[in-house]
Image (tube, rainbow, N blue to C red):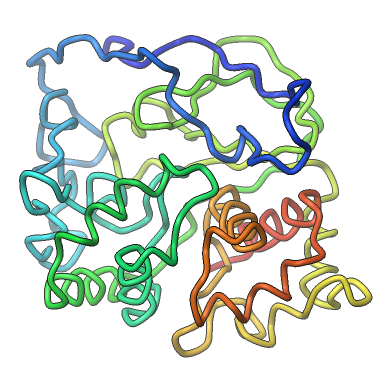
Length: 315
């Protein structure tokens, strides 16, 4: 397939003049200004193991995105499969038919249905936003166009699917240089490497699979060396008063309790963003209030470590 994502490389290391506590650009990647995809071609696309074909135009269809493996999931509610034109995109455009999603969106698979409904309500009432406003804009707009019954059907669907390993966490001192393409997704540039620094860099294991929204195409999260063990210590002990033991609310295996979401095996960069957003007050509300003292004293390094550890756990 032709290369149809922007190949400009973003500078990802700290930039002079940016506040130390500003939302880190590696965690909130954005498609470069002026980015445009070339016109889609009509050649059939294939993914390994699938008997169906789609085109580039199908892949980009917000209201009927590709379902490569229709026999592998329950019947999709209309909202998941088609959305509500002209505003609400199909859920599976970003979260995929199996709910596992991409790093720029949430992994919904196996979350409590009530929790998913709660999050849609929080987008709707303004208590859930992102520290980078553009990232939550779509979900805020979508939530306002949905009925409670539509939200429930979608929540029940994603909740019913068993979570599987989707993100491989790899500790490293150096990472491939990357660029951000269409949809705020990060891809590996050819050749060169750079120090990872104090970052999480999450990329597809297989670039073309991610581009065509193949639900069998997982991701790699590169994290700083030593961060998994550091995160495990923080989660298990609270770090001598820096935070609280995560198992108190999220369960002894971090797979959730009742309406509290499981963290084990979720995307590393996504977990970091939620910790950061809660700490900086852009995610609020009754349930989130319980998390505010948990994150209040965490540094960005602590949040990277917790995200790396939780993502490395078997879901």
